[in-house]
Image 1 (cartoon, rainbow, N blue to C red):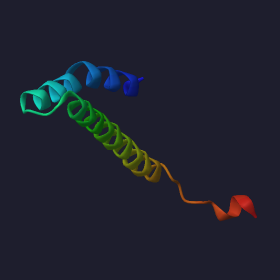
Image 2 (image 1 turned 45 degrees about the vertical axis):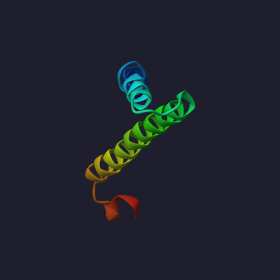
Image 3 (image 1 turned 60 degrees about the horizontal axis):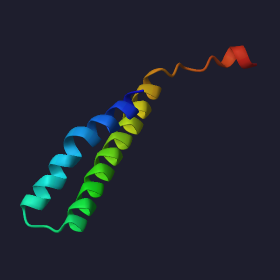
Length: 72
């Protein structure tokens, strides 16, 4: 379950740092929370795109040529 582990790590490490960093930068708490959600969505989207591309590449390498005589 790597996806659950990544979400757990993101919630414990990356997002509080982004939230606190935005607060120290002078953003209001609501704006910092919105920033935190944007960071989480960006990480989730990046992971999803990476998984899809890796799956597409891996699936293409396992294809074998069709034996025409076996189906006739």
